[in-house]
Image (cartoon, rainbow, N blue to C red; front, side, top):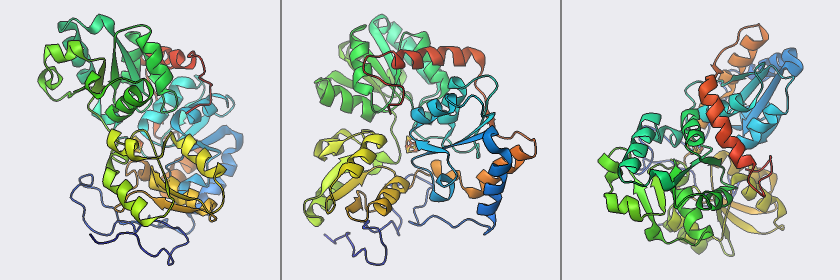
Length: 396
Ligand code: SF4
């Protein structure tokens, strides 16, 4: 096999060679050139700063960990989706919340912020492929299938933060809770105290990893509900026997890491510690040394001693920033053919400047607004998560 670990000397980052060639397993239609394009106009940084200065305390900019450097430099706070939404709610004087993230995150911010605050997504095309894998009509059909199988009454829906507001509202209406990658274990324990089964949406991998590794369920306690097949592609008996009904959804970024990536980096980086996000497949998580949310990954690197070697399985923008911030460590990206989160990366400096300048001139653009009924039920599901013992408001 040809080695893929290259001499990183051309770059200060000890990263695996970024993808330069076509990869038949990559997300269709997404190229992975390995380098982000520069801002198209050298004056964009000054324009963004000027517009932000004009708006002053009226604007609060949230930057998700996976955002581009050119955008993150303007963020008032960085973090994961739930933490950011809560930070926005903690800033009631900010009229405009500019969410540099993806659509479901802006929806969550709108649900958690006050009526006088407006949430802006700089590019409305910034969605999330995982969230898009669960449409509300499909979820309602799934519940009808569970009712027909006679198991809906003993099933508690648990929905990952990475989902549309309508799915969160469905969860609230049906007695369920939201979870983050940090509190998925506690959420599942809460659900099994109230029901016999869990319908986990939309990320099958987080659901399986948590149920099997944290709760001690067997892989054969889990079934995968495929919304594109009749009855989810499952028999009635399979639905009745399962403890975890996992929605067939996944993250197109974290789903790229394979067990072979882990084997390869271990062979090429002596003493490496492999740390991955729980949105990775069960096989990858089993092979890794550590698993944790984005915040946990950051904390692990920050606490690590100089000279330690890490291979990180999460989105590349964050890994690159960690590598730059910790030059005394050998930080490697886990995949050889990398892919940024293509939808996250739609938020670029031109889009940020566009939205800030229009806000400064009195024009609200790209507002994300969740209708009151949806917002009400989604908030109930979010509040159930916040009420879980051991869940603090800033966890994710
Ligand atoms: S990294 Fe994955 S889960 Fe996060 S926004 Fe991108 S596609 Fe969605």
